[in-house]
Image (tube, rainbow over all chains, first blue to last red; front, side):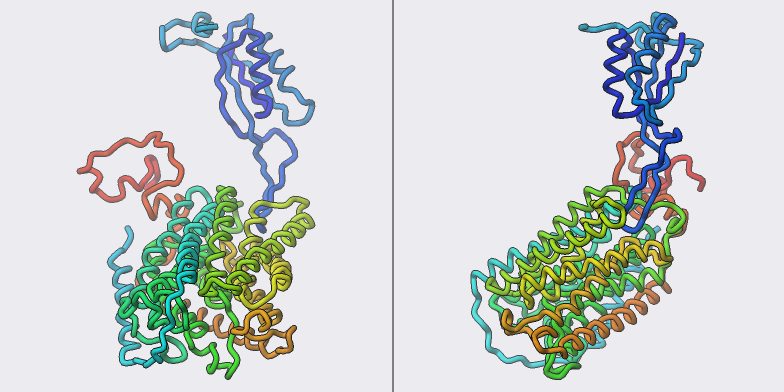
Amino acid sequence: MKLIQAIIRKEKLNEVLTALFAKEVYGVTVSKVQGHGGETEEVQNYRGTTVKMELAEKVQLEIGVTEPFVDKAVQAILKSARTGEVGDGKIFVVPVEKVYRIRTGEEDAAAVTPVLVGR
Amino acid sequence: MEKWPQTIRLLGLGLVLSLVLLSGLAFAQDAEVPAIDTGDTAFMLVSAALVLLMTPALAFFYGGLVRAKNALNTMMMSFIALGFVGVAWALIGYTLSFTPGNPFFGSLRHAFMNGVGLTPEGVIWPVTIPHVLWVAYQGTFCIITAALISGAIVERMRFAPYIAFITLWSIFVYAPLAHMVWGGGWLSAGGLFGDGFALDFAGGTVVHINAAVAALVAVLVLGKRKDYGKQAILPHNVPFVLLGAGLLWFGWVGFNAGSAWSAGGIAGLALTNTFFAPMATLVVWTLLDFGRTKKATAVGAATAIVVGLVAVTPAAGFVSPMSAIIIGAIAAVPSYFGILWRSRSGLDDSLDVVAAHGLGGITGALLTGVFANTALNSAGANGLLYGNPGQFMIQLGAIAVAIVYSLVVSFVLLKIIGAITPLSADSKAEGLGMDVTQHGEEAYTDGEGAVLIASSEAARPMVAVKPAGSKA
């Protein structure tokens, strides 16, 4: 059981989701995040006020998967989220102690295997 | 806790003072009353509605420029002028502005709308619209002028003293200055300048310079925001700023063209100039933006439109459209660099009222004295370019009088109010945001975490105002 935490460019979200779904990874939580990853700061002007935007908006994906899916998911993200420029993001793979599905009380592998309603 | 009784006491004091000051001044007026013209009346009905819209427009313009936590407070500072200043106008402001009196203010002849009827009878100028409409139309000017001041002191001034200030200001500063320039007073013909008179078609001096000086005084009295110069303070909604600028331009047609008081050639001239001048300002401002940052900014475009409108306001019915384009183009420069200088200075004129309305207003008033042409409007005067250099000096003199008068009286009013109740919010309230601390509301809330309290509990003050988990 692993939790894949990927921080990607927000304009790459649709490509990454498509790539994940193609590898049959369906359970994803997406959140908007801000961070600093060493990119060049963007300069903005509001009347006389000039500011450097030190935080860039990113999208974070959280995906709980069983071992056979870890590499598939990581490769899919690496391929679809990459532009080659600074700021493409990071992927963290972290161990998960326990998973429960709230609806049924199922645990671990059963809990992260999506029920594909109507697919 | 807002101290409402104090505000009411202040307003009462102002009213009594003005009554004492002015009682016994009564004047006769010749009785030749022009007939109503239905075309003129229809035009002025529309113009009054247009100028009324400018105050909500200003609320959006200012509201977009502040941080999200102060959006409602900033917008309310404009909206509340529609209430307090509008009522003060009907009760006393109008009669002090537009009735014959001494050189500085009018009489109490039309106080409480007394004798204001459905014919032009009693209007100080020979207009062909109902007296009631004239009062309403002129009232919309007073309202927006008072609201303009708020841009300088947003995000920190407490709401009750703000209401007291703009209401008293409309009586003791706006009305006398309107009387001096438009009501047959000191800056009109037969006053300070002998046979000459200050040219101010729709309010460059009375409205914009006047409000900007009061704004400057308010900044100096209140001081800067605690974050000013330490943190980046960014506009929270630039589309609001553009919306406000667009609606202001639309309303300004009523402001400038309506100041012809009649649907004719001069109104057509004023409307055309009200279109072309800001257009020229927008062009020059955009080029300056490109030169400075290589990008044309949206806040800059909105600001440029307002600056161009301000500059053409005194000139609108006196100059040719080509002159208006030149006025608009020139006006971009002092305001553009004024804003750049201001935001690097210690002067927290938060939304640049001085740079936009003060510098724009002075530029416009002076250039009116350059480009005014009696071949277009015989009721005006020739400017410098048309063989009358004296008019430029008159414009300069009128500007000086407006600055000194507004400066002194605005300062005194703020000091009096400040002696009764604090003008500024404390730094904790300022940090929390003026929406929550002054109004008990937020502009943008999704209701998450909002738990309904029973009505018996709600009667306890401050519970709803203090966010959960805050250090009291």
